[in-house]
Length: 169
Image: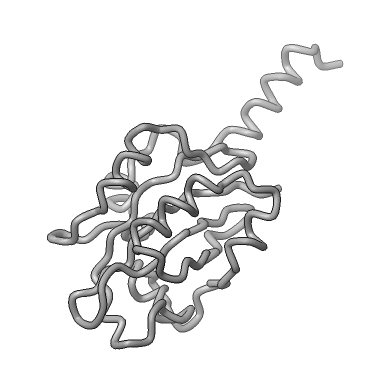
């Protein structure tokens, strides 16, 4: 008969995050894909940078991961936000045509109002432009939520926002 300590050790090991203690650079070096959140030469809006660095904004799931700032070059060519495949290409998905990307309305995604600060900051960074949430499946119970908008127009535009990992069991 197993003791309570043995059972707790088993539960702790079973619930341990397999990526715990692995930074994105080393994860990428080990062949584990990491989606691109920033591009060299693309400035993160100060408001989003502060929100990410302050560390208050977390996505509440089984992992309670912090939101991080997003800033990617996006030639929006007058169409605003990208579709699912374009978004997958922007973040460097390994198979954009078959990526499991779902577009959500921020109001539906945050029906309880928990992420109002994040949505408002993204909207302000985009100077009132449309805000969209992209859910990108990561396999198993993991998904990333990207709350983004456009900043600027045409070839000089950027896709800016915040993203967080969710573990949904």
